[in-house]
Image (spheres, rainbow, N blue to C red):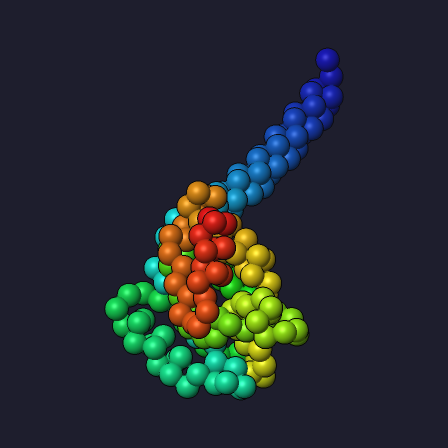
Length: 179
């Protein structure tokens, strides 16, 4: 064998080794980053929020003491209060998805009509509010399913739902049946 060819082979082997080491370092960095983000995810998921409070006061039939009630309750336990801006079913969906929650308290109208019709025949639901203070509703069965998905029997943390609003009994029963 010629000395020049062995030098070329050694250079190729050294270059290959450097390339392998570079690839391994990139792989280890990717694995480390993944483990680090997973650890943060599980740490966040492992700690449930004690109380989520939605205080909804629409412009029409305003409830001026809703925020006061929410603030008073938050003094006795760790609570996240949603009372300004969009306090809608979508906000609730996102809040429950992003942070496991043990208890949910709704303060507001629970007799908001889902549709127009005869007053006695109207289906009633929670009266969420949009950013401009208008009423926003979600069909009772969709609301019950949303809350039920986060119950312990479905792998969630939501143990208690308290609906502080008029005519909420039927809706509360639907939520109970859903989870």
